[in-house]
Length: 164
Image 1 (cartoon, helix red, strand yellow):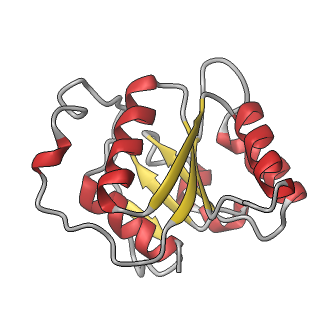
Image 2 (tube, one colour):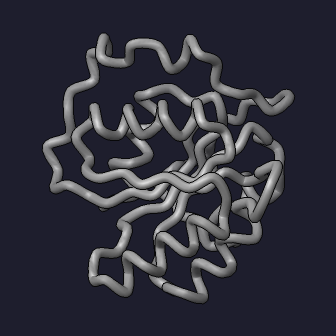
Image 3 (cartoon, helix red, strand yellow):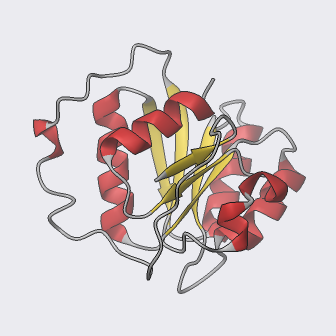
């Protein structure tokens, strides 16, 4: 499920948080989703699960959206974001896991990110579809929300709307 600023009335999945399995990471090159014809972008993915970071990175590369960097938790993501910004090569979008087991999750990281860069564009990613932050993502400074598990099409749609 994808929610973004342009969504009229999102329909949410409910249930327990879910994780990507190795099947989700299986040969994504067999997809029929065409590569992006937009300019290339720089995207930062923050998630504490290796499989999700790897799979989403591969999906974004397959779509042709541009360069991807990854971080395990919010502190690392903030460091990478700030370093890139100071080098004149800022990230165009950050995808943040709402909760992580070790470190800073998206709930806390978005506050710090917006202090570093009030114009930062970030998407919250979570398996907790009913979390108030996910339901009201704009109120917290996010431009969109991805409900795990999400499909390649949902990710691509979100990237298309969030990067314009």
